[in-house]
Amino acid sequence: MAAAARLHDPQGQDLESLIVQLEKACGARPRVSVREVEQAIGERSFGPLLLVPGLIALTPIGIIPGLPTVIAAVVVLIAGQLVLGRHEFWIPRFIAERSVKGKRLTQSLERARPAARVIDRVLKPRLRHLTGAVATRLSALVCLLIACLIPPLELIPFGVAAPAAAIAAFGLGLTTRDGLLVLIALLASAASVGLVLWAVLR
Image (tube, rainbow, N blue to C red):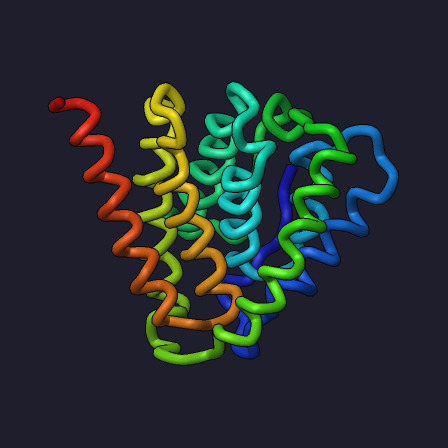
């Protein structure tokens, strides 16, 4: 599965419109696959391709056993291909066809909309040099590294929250062209690494 994706959007995009786009993609389907989610945002910028997996991992459906690892695999594949300079993203069929209940995903998106409206009022394009093409590839590298932390953190209650939040923050910062949020995402990434070190060394 391949989809063309821009490294960044000079105008930025708001979070609520992305959620509405995903709700339309879900429709009344009994199940929604990774492929269908990707197709809903595939023509948008790279930011949403990071934001959506991160958000899904933070919603109630993110506690489904094994789903965070699938999400991490998607992030690794997309971020890794971007780091290598590809602009056509490919996801293997066995991952693309993984799915969740459409009703559950729609409910999670509906619950996120009020928060999205608040976030859209707070975020704005700033520190744009941190959301340009070069910075986007560096962000992709960081996302690739912290996504690799998710599978072992599944064994810790709420352990995936920190890396998922970092990935979502990177995606949201790149989507809205808010470089300040990208800086915050770097701090969340450091927290994720610290959590793994704590779990290993305790």
